[in-house]
Amino acid sequence: MVWTLSDGTPIGELARTDPIVAVVVDPSQCLRCFSVLAEWLEWERSSGVSVELLLAREPADDEKRILRATGMRTDGYLTGVRIEAQRTPIELVLDTGRVIFRAERVYGPSSPLLDALKDGQSLREAVDALAVAGT
Image: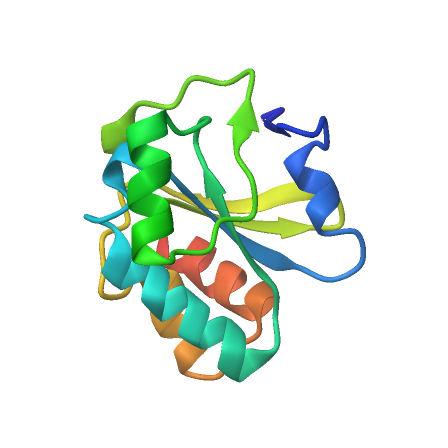
């Protein structure tokens, strides 16, 4: 999977030394996904682990107005990839330049990955546990 940010950075490069979470949302789905995004931001605040909130594409002008009005933080958008809106939000765990976990259609207020992290597991432990469970 070669997903690139609008500035040309491959998303795998967002995690150069430690794992991070990236949540990808289609701009048209941001309000629908607000609860899961809020939970990820709260986890980021309490854990100190970076969470990147990425848009699946560049937002249209009306979507930009909605994003500004809600005050929702975004950390960039993807280019060169087509992701169907209904597949988002997508949770990714990136570790040392690669994707080690991916879950699609993750609607809040939580997810198996977020639940494992709230139980105190590290990102790597949570990904390993989900792989064993077949999630």
